Each structure stands twice: as C-alpha cells, then as structure tokens.
Length: 310
Image (tube, rainbow, N blue to C red):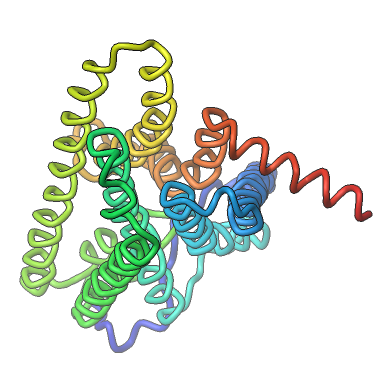
C-alpha cells in the first residue's frame, strides 16, 4: 500500500520490451507526429495567410487544427522519449500536466466539432441568416466558449483526480497518463467524487452529441429538398469531412472506454489508445484537404511561395 503523498513518479505502459521494437515504435510515433505537425501547420498557415479563407468554416477549422496539434504534443513526445531511452518513468507533476493538457485539447476538439455542426446547419438550412448568426464576433465568441469550457472541464478533472489518495502503486496500463488509469490506483471509496464528476461530464458530452445528431438530421432534410445535383454535391462536400472526423474521434474513444472486459487484451487496448489519441490529429488535415478545393489551392499557393523564396 502506498500513499499519493509518497509517489514521486508513475510508471507508464511500455510500448514494447525488445529494443528493436522500441526503436520501431519511436520511428512510427515520430512519423505520425511529423505528419500531424506538417498537415495542421499547413492548414493554420493557409487559413491565416489567405484572406479569402477568413470565413466561419475555415476559422473553426483553424481552431480544430490547433487542438489537434496540442493533443498530439501532450502525449507523443513523452512516449517517444520512453521508447528511445527504454524507460517508463513520468514525474508526478509531468503526469498531472499531461492529464490536464490532453483533456484540454481533446475536449476543445469535441466542443469545436459541435460548434462546426452548428455552422454547417446554419449555412445549409438558414443561408439567408448566415451572415447575421455567424458574424465574426459570433464566431469568436463561440470559439472562445469552446476553449473556455475545455479549460474548465480539464481543470476540474485534473484537480479532482490528483487530490485522490493513491493506494495501489504507481504502474499504469497506458502509454500516457489519463484519468481512468489514475482512478484504478486510487483507494476503493475515494474515487466516488470523481465518478460523479465523470457522470456530469458524460451528460454534457451526450448533450453535445444529441445537438450534433439533430443538426445533421435537419441538414439531411434540407439537402434532400435541393433540386440540383450540383447543390447536393456542394452540401455533402462540406459536411462529409466534418462527419468523417467526428466519426473517427467518437467511435475510437467510445470503443476504448466502453468496450466489454471480455474484449480486453494488452495489444488491443494499446492499439485503440493509439487510434483515438495519436491517429486523428495526423489524419484530420488529410480528410479536410481532400474534399476542399479552396483549402488545397491555398496550401498549394503557400508551398509554392515558400519554395520560390528559397
């Protein structure tokens, strides 16, 4: 039995035991990280530098790219360090920081995806009121609300989780620090408060999910009333990337945390954790750029300008 006051570090789950596999995992994580940094960095630069992309949709996409960069930087560098140096340690303060920043950026992404569904709803179902409902000030307020809500959400969870006494050692079954793993180390009755907070959070997240589903039901009804095939194509070209990103984000996170114990295995758990925490930030820029000609053109101009300068 150990007390949280005596714990100075945690032991994360090793990605592999063999040195060759550790180096392979390091290279894979490095490649995914560079892809995420390049893709999201190009989106941020293209939207910031192209005046014709200063619209609500691309403004929210820029914020989404920032959250993707933050989420992958919160978990992957430490995993790469551990794989390269064949260690499992993370300090108590480092673990708390990792929990906070991962929750902050991942919840900000979810709230931003909720706001983006409202943007799609207004643009397709109420195009005449688009400029009024989604002016620059309204967009700034919605983005600020998403980030502020994520900050409060992550702060409450982090403070509450790390105020619990830990009685079951310091070894985690995950390659990065997250709330469920720390709760497993807490004393038998001390995690009830955090579980209550998780229940409230689940209601909030479910409310956002219902709002997204309702928005897309209205969008589908509006699209089916569009007489021209060109109108259908334009509507789906803006909605499908958002739905693809949302589906990848939700399906992997739900499966990781709600799958039955009978399906649990170290390899499957690790694979799904990587899928929901590492893969989306690298894949999201590709999903959005493939379906958006304006964004592809802006990225192309940005890269051409960089090459010409050199």
